[in-house]
Length: 549
Image 1: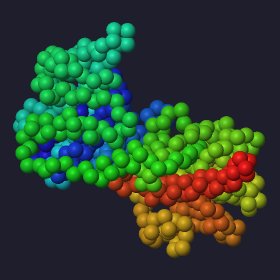
Image 2: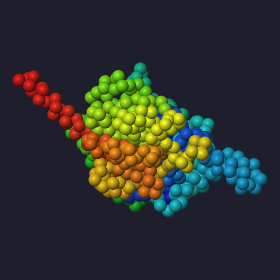
Image 3: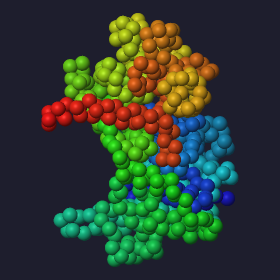
Image 4: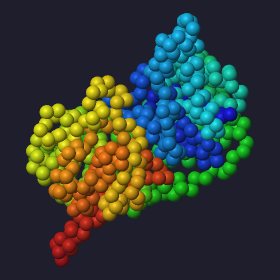
């Protein structure tokens, strides 16, 4: 039987429960244990698929096509394993299941209530992954903050599991905040005490308290927290702000979070942690040899979590190239033909980000044109690839009204069109092409040199596709479809062979990038940007020498 660790949060949201959960999982995995993580979200949406990125950040898509919370991206990036539909559960999904059962008569006429019916369904899903026989430890992150009304059924389910399972099979880690009052020049523990008291009133007592803090916790403060929160001093863990999230596992190892957890769970057989590759990655990340500036062209740039996986993929690819990647956010809504040179000046590469809707698309098209004409390394993802297709159709093929039917249903040249199977569907949730699909790559292409093979699989999240009725025109004019789905013949990758680096992909490669396996398109894109920056320096250098002479 697997053992279960529950991670809760108090005082405030956005403390980093997902990072702490992923860091603990990484340490336990490094000690030879089979670990997975799941996220229980308290919102009533069935999944985050219909949420605006401004509301909830990016929607992360798993191999099996589940639209999930962005924390699952952290889990995959840290553990280098795939998650699935079972790793993300929302209140909406719980209630949907219970209501469907009630309609089917599964409860034999009983009054359906939060306790026991909702909590039983929560417990069933909390235990599911541990009952597959694949894992030694299942870590469950409880979304929200202790005290939130919507989180109460999850906390109650944890209480019941603590009572039902052997004491050594469950562990509760509570993440909290120790604020620093500048005027008083001291850290305050009272919010943590109140948070733990609130959790205890619900019947759940934390075994370990992880304290987010800007200042070092003194032994006196640790003793005070331990005394008034009723845990051992060794179970008070300092989680200071770190320069990068990838340093958190090592910080937690220094605090012995993994050892304390193993002791409480009565796990005695484990090895010394194997983190050589992780430390090598951190060394390259902290001590880069070069620097490049990449323009991220999007319409959600005000909220960085909207492009979380893309940003982390650049971190991985930058370390692989021993190069610091500086991301320059450029709002596509404000790019025009008149200011594009000014907006994109100084960049070494251009990534046009994915998204939905018509807002900002014309700016993206202008940016693509600039990159194509100025031989700047270009990378388009999903909508970014579609913008590259529209730009090429308008400015090279001469189809001035070329567009996507997503933005202009009446266009006479729908170079991007809705998939046939989607045209009769009106509901939004779960109607897209989701999850992992195969792609066959032509030999001798840029895509082939990037992946080093002709058959790949990548994850998708979209409704609109390249319209194959225009493919012959595109290829005659110089834009190649270098990757296609072998079953449907849908275009997955486009590129320009006469450009140093110009590639657009219909899928979302950022969703599979991890610390140990950086995504190859990102790696080669950063490499191309580095070479572009060097060429610019070579052009400038003779001029400077002439002036000094």
